[in-house]
Length: 328
Ligand code: COA
Image 1: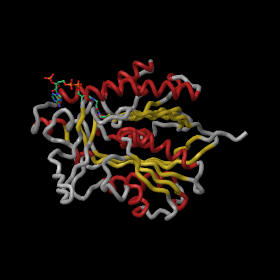
Image 2: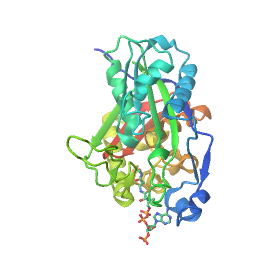
Image 3: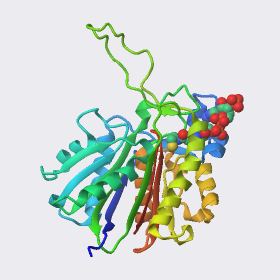
Image 4: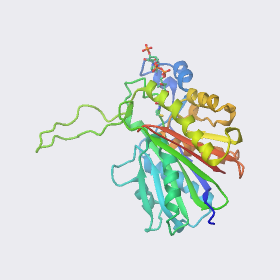
């Protein structure tokens, strides 16, 4: 009988802009303060790109680090998937741009995947499935956001939440490793959206340019309630399918949406909060990039040991959610 293969992560990388915007800076432009933001979200500061930095420059940096750590021949990368909802262009995709700028083989399947804050875990699962039919060994899975370009800086309920960054990993299929994934979607734009806008008047239909802005619109309370249910629900399915229990997991590497959500999730799963990795204080919510950045941070600090059991989980706009079980 064929062994069901899982995922082996060969290398990780991440990249965040140098420019830091602590909560106090928001207090200068909005009716808010460090205490409120820290208490309600866990965020202390975030990074925003500056002139010359883009989603592509962040991706390139993260990917080069991941490929270098993996120590692989980059010609053997056959799949590039970038989870993002703030790509530099509507087309070309970030994944195609990376194929070019990283000098990857032309025979590379490269595309972006928009599942908002679930983007990295959705991409990981998609790459895993595609690798089964690939004639090459490796996939490059990336999460990137430059959310600073779609924030409404007059809205204290949304602008304080987000940050910019990228994370990446190189994966291969392995008969010695597990991979169990569970995902869901509850479609609707009401609680969280970034709308497209007509920039110019259409001379044929007379449709006027939009007056609304292309910014994040969020009903924080609704998203908060959704996330609180979605993650423990999908994790429970993963535990059942993998035949493991929550207390066997070494690290929960979850999307960094809100510290309170992470704490509540630990409580629901009855696991010590210390098992939940947290870096929202440093980077805010970096949407599709957050899980990948967190994974790289745990790796680079030498915290992860081979064989340790991990849950990676994303949840957010769409609405979407997904949880993955794998081992380091
Ligand atoms: N500073 C000070 N006060 C603020 C504020 C800010 N930055 N943002 C909102 N407030 C005010 C509100 O206006 C409200 O005032 P009111 O009671 O006078 O109306 C009060 O604080 C409480 O607002 P509320 O929205 O109920 O706070 P909350 O505890 O739910 O926290 C979020 C708001 C956004 C932090 C929280 O809902 C959240 O984290 N949601 C999920 C995050 C998310 O959606 N991430 C993206 C997808 S994963």
